[in-house]
Image (spheres, rainbow, N blue to C red):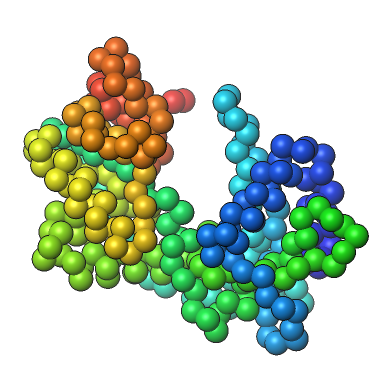
Length: 270
């Protein structure tokens, strides 16, 4: 089944050189970052995941994502059957949004590739394998194995949240504000918090960046309704739509709701 799905995915990807190049580059990046590794072919207990592309065509670019199909069935079973998803650890979405605007200064960010920063236990890795051979169909495909949590694993939300919250709690004495943010103002990988003053928001930014960096979590796409809060943030770590101009009104998508930081209003696109 998984080999047939690989041939099907390869055939579809070859229709677009742009998409196929991006697809191959994503897997190469996963390898170089240590998210996956090539392993020898064995007969041990293992599970292979079919994969396919999801393409989003924006105005400026084409974005390609790889989906690893954890619900693909073999002999009537799929990977999700064997995984305990764990209890819910994230806050309610409405709680995070209402807390977000209780004070004058707002601050938003998100964690880059959050799931992929958390390791999978060694004994579980053989059940997160996939086949790939780039687009050289003349040879047998190689076997790759995930070393980190993948997006399509039903346990990834719990495991990543547990690691993040446990890490924050262990440093709460030094990073009190940041630890409170992790506990009360995050929804999965999104950070939406508040401060009474610009100086307090800058302090929170520094604490959050230092705290999460200790565990390998990288915060990006910083935004605020006060331009001064992110003046010291490197441009590559700011939200791309943030423009330092009084005339600009960039829109930020916050947990499915559109927020205009400059005007500090929520809006809805119907």
